[in-house]
Length: 134
Image (cartoon, rainbow, N blue to C red):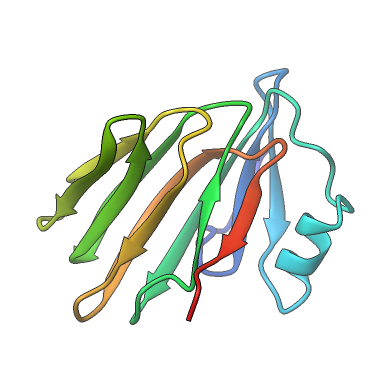
């Protein structure tokens, strides 16, 4: 894929396809509903690279049953809570470039103290979500 203009992850995510090619996916109001409905593909042996800003704790948890995830802090701070077999494991991301490795199938959520900008590299096939109890 050749682009003459630089792209930005605020307006497009990147699909890393299993044939080592990439596809830009436009980030708009319909992106997440379309992704969750399977309209953007099943991401079988593929990764989604995306950028997200957070100003509050996640309202739920997620797990990626088909592959690992890497979350890299770019700005701010966040604490990831991973539900490991031995209990909740917390990983504090406090400096740009720090990251958390989320193993395949592990439920996880993030607590945001002020704000955080993070880069996600996600094995998205079969991603599961659950809301936290109020």
